[in-house]
Image (tube, rainbow, N blue to C red; front, side, top):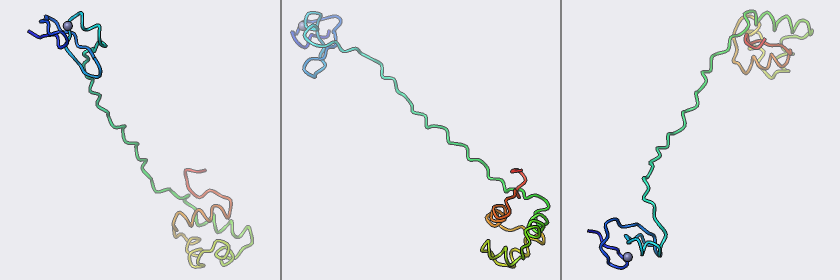
Length: 126
Ligand SMILES: [Zn+2]
């Protein structure tokens, strides 16, 4: 039989109390000396890590099909030579020439053309 840890009385149902920082089994009388300790079940919270943010697939952007034609016509409209464009965009002349004859340059180069001519050269941005 459990005993009251304060007065030593044998008790059927000890009450857990908190007395001066110590949890004791106490009888009814002595339990008033401390704070009742509620026996509580520990809820084990399993922290689920947040789902990983989906990484958006970066699709290679589609150029408008007549990209080369567009930049050539734009340039001609502006009465510029290929070398002028190369100079303005800080690109090698050969790259400007190739771009106007069907070569697909890097996206960053295409962006330069877009900004320079004020047009959209990727299909999904029209
Ligand atoms: Zn007692």
